[in-house]
Amino acid sequence: MSRLPSLKQLTYLVALDEHQNFNRAAKACFVSQSTLSTGLQSLESLLGGELIERDHKAFVMTPLGRQVVVRARELLVQTRELMELVEGQKGAMQGAIRLGCIPTIAPFLLSELVQRCRRHYPELQLLLREDTTPQLLAMLRAGELDLLLLALPTDTEGLQTRVLGQDPFVLVMHREQARQHGRMPVDYADLPDQSIFLLEQEHCLTEHAVSACRLTDSRKVNPFAATSLHTLVQMVGAGLGTTFLPQMAIDAGILDNTEIVAMAPQGDKAYRDIGLVWRPTATRVETFSRLGALVTELL
Image 1 (cartoon, rainbow, N blue to C red):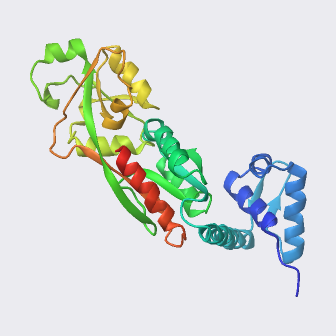
Image 2 (image 1 turned 90 degrees about the vertical axis):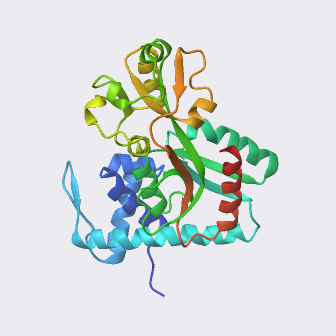
Image 3 (image 1 turned 180 degrees about the vertical axis):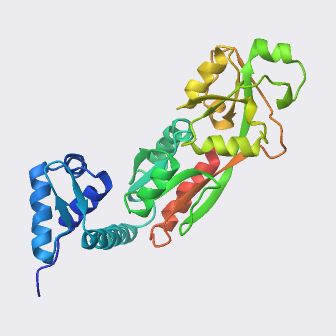
């Protein structure tokens, strides 16, 4: 049989395509840059074709290289799923699960989830990754993660999803501002322009909150965009305006020791769905289902 490319060589190629830089790709693969470069040269020699056009400061993938990257991703995903298959034979809730979660859920849910798993399923290891929804979906499709805990709906075309429960949205403002406002529930039309603070668009919570809470007047939104819920709380705590928070953040104590009060926003269904997302080819669905049951209890 003729020699075949190694998984390590394919991993180097995919990493270079993802990071678009030899040094960053090498760090992602935990090897030196020279080791990565040598591995890629060996891959080209083995395949008998140029995959990368190089000069002193940059590189581009050749047409052949782009085709090989696509196939290499598929092979790496299939290899990881082969390992999942073996893990699955050991029984549910055993082995490692690489779980991705968004920043507007992770700080308020994952700690308790990990603790419950340790108590009830000591043979299960959760390996956690926090990132934005687009980044997590890309890593799931690439086989770098096994399971995602996200706010839905979002674009999960080609993936499996399961809604676990709802997380209501709450309108929050400084206590003095609420006293001055008086009327409840708050009518957005009564709020000053640019008085509602939201997260950056990379965070799906902004889209979900605006839709669920029926905020249609963009003039009410402040152009400042926060990177975290804790920053929003600081802005509101300083009396600069108001914002929407998920109930799980409030339950976790994000408003403790502040002068901020919470109230129901406009809209009968002001909530986001919390759910799991996984690849349809995954073999550890029973484990995913039991993890989902634990999340539902926490919600």
